[in-house]
Length: 461
Image 1 (cartoon, rainbow, N blue to C red):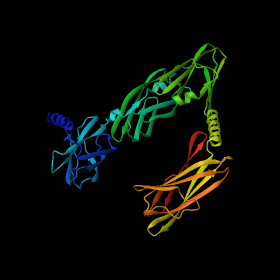
Image 2 (image 1 turned 45 degrees about the horizontal axis):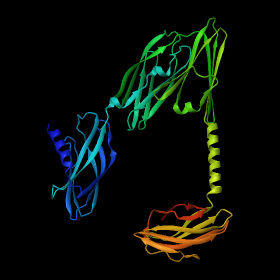
Image 3 (image 1 turned 90 degrees about the vertical axis):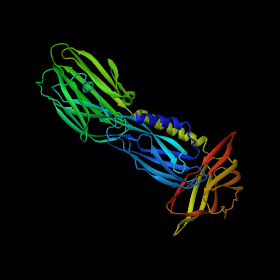
Image 4 (image 1 turned 45 degrees about the vertical axis):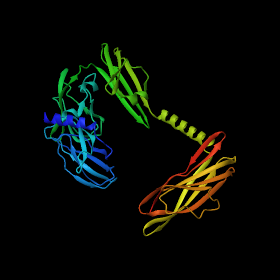
């Protein structure tokens, strides 16, 4: 009851707080938790006051544990810290919104609230298992190798590593060790052979999934062993470059009419690029898959052949050709001017201190281009650029720590290449790496304004 009253008071006070004294932001580092894990946030506090202050914080839910800290903050200063929140030992799974109250210790009436959201997942709510029988709609055939598709779904955006999966039945046993990415759907296929004398009927398959010693799934599924007649089945899977062919041939070697079927599971992407010589009798969507079923009758001595082809190659070739055509047309009709940028650096023991910038303007077309404006930008330089080449800039503008150099060029004839250069000193010696911004030029193509950008450059001291 005391906790509920405290939370209500926090929510009421939030509507009256004067947030002008502080600014609080946070970044989620670890807020999707398994039982026993701690939540972690990067918190930033800015003192917006005109005076220095001593600042601290508190969490609305006092059952959570955290390290108490106090910060001496100058006016307009910002401090950052890692907030590690330990939930109560007996906390239930669910979403928790925790109020982070940042306040002045010298004047407790100055405070601000920020909400921290934490999701705690129960172990038995992490993984789902698709019914095993859906991967074998015809049941297990004791005469042949049966492929079972185990489909598992990680329900949440949380990584699960070193997960043990165990399938146990009187028909077979199988174990896996799997890793799951965030919200990953994983399909594990395996082959089993059962005794030819296995009786027709349903059998239990126990599925046990554990993360260390914690049980994620403990369920029992049914799997059917089917009756079989004297039908010979030949399935060939032929794979090529981005092409897969499945050839199914069933032959009735008996002396009576037999009803048969063949099923194939495809995902949404495979379905788009798959076709067969005979249309399936039925298509059903189950979960994330599509189940194609061919049903047919076989007279004695009769055979039934299905050719199924999944072809990614032809659409990919068409797409590549279209991209190449678009690229050629784009370059032929739009990219008449190419701008490249080079930087030569002068290095000293303290790092990069001076640079020579080359702007190479090339008219790729045959026609003269007029009224070109070339613009380059610089950041954090000691003084305005000097020692220009043969072409002096029209203007050099400085705004804050950014300098813009502008050249107005009357014209460039077809196939002409023009090089513009200047020198500049860095505001501070650069140690490590430095990214040089792109230059750009603007010109008219008919009534349309066209902009060409140079490459950006990453230099190292």
